[in-house]
Length: 294
Length: 156
Image (tube, rainbow over all chains, first blue to last red; front, top):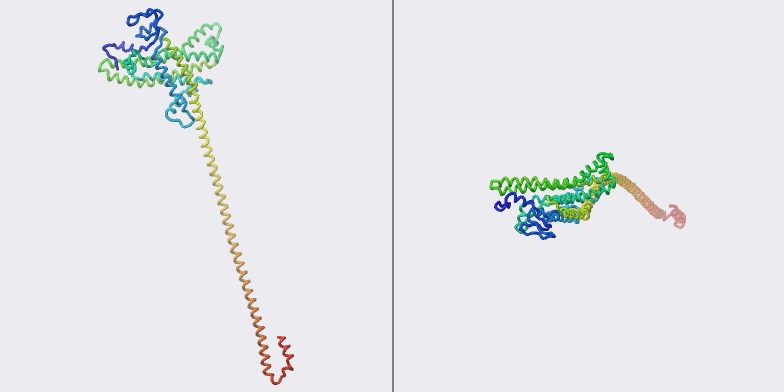
């Protein structure tokens, strides 16, 4: 592990690991890390450090998160498309078997939870499960391996676990939320508004109270969906980083840190699978609720 | 916790991947699996049917075997009867032939005997005549008794 105590304190090491590689627009008049001042209409550039990222605000994109997220999504598409092309009613083998096992597992979960007929739900659940799992899986790669290698190649920051980025998890949660709203309105029509207004107290006087409670409840869903995954993965990643930081503390810590690293990684195999599964199941449940008339 | 354009980017990627999966991944795999499922179900049903068919065929074979045995027994019995009949017939024919041969032989013997008797008669009468001729030569005139002798010869 490459936490060299001379040039970097432990907290600097941790903060460095938690900073995304960010490309964004610095506002005009901002004084950069090297003392230069950004010209008036602002400037699109790579950020140096957390302060510049904060100054960019919403007009920024996490290049590393997007790269790994889209890359892993492409891996998913490529892998499953290959099997889809090969798939026949004959005797399956190797990769086909594995993919069919995953598909069958997802299909079973969808059928258990979602009772309507919607051709979108199962592929959606499969995409979420495999994609989130792959993104979480990046957590098991030693924390310094890729960031440090890239640093040697001149890339300053690198966060390789996309699901530790709230933008990524919330992006997917917002996608699910839009689908929830779409199907609620499509299936229930005006009944959706009635459901929001007349629950739980079915009396005209209580409509404002009901509306407030139900809308809060509705908005809580995407947040619970996105932030649960983010929180779990962020915490897991943080512990990996802390264990990695232990290696630099002293020779005495080498063995305990190694054992901790192994133990946490083994435990994390469970966590990443479970989190991917929970994200998928909650998506199905929310969409199932959107389809059900009360 | 910087919420920024990454969220929008991820949203777009999410929609794209779900759309891809829905269009190009899920239907072929699910279709192939469903097809295989029905194929296996068909196979199992066919195996069941084949087992049943085998049972029926065995039963039929047993029945046919029993029939064949019965038939064979019948044929053997008939053959035995026929053989007996043939033997009997042959015996009868043989004895009839023997009788016939015997009868023919005795008839021939009888014929033979009759001819011998006739020859003997002729010779005896000739001898008698010759003897009588010799005895009577002197005293009896041949011419006088010629008619008598002739009628005698004709009688015997």
